[in-house]
Length: 125
Image 1 (tube, rainbow, N blue to C red):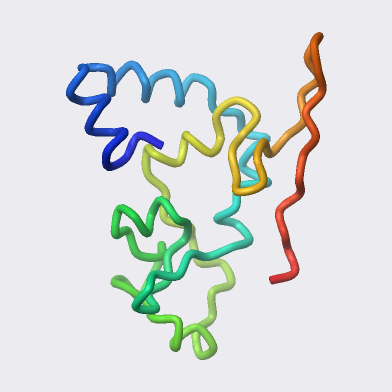
Image 2 (spheres, helix red, strand yellow):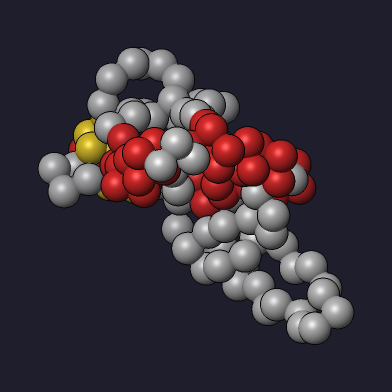
């Protein structure tokens, strides 16, 4: 993902814009169905909840209202149905090409040389 150290390297080499264009142009709508932020959350060491690991690293709280950080202890009393997922340009990294998640590629694409096995995200958490 083009954040923190990798993002800084891209900026210092004047390659950030080209990299973001590559991600945006490689984005596939079908990958939106399987991205990890739709079924998992990320929890910081102090108990704050985020939509994904990358949003956590960027300090971006859960999308929707109420604004601000939500603590793990508040989850049982909160209704998250229909709550939007906070998205930004770094999200193109999970939707580009075959997609990206903790288990590897999100969709299977046959290639002339090989076929990649796909691990489905865990949905019973």
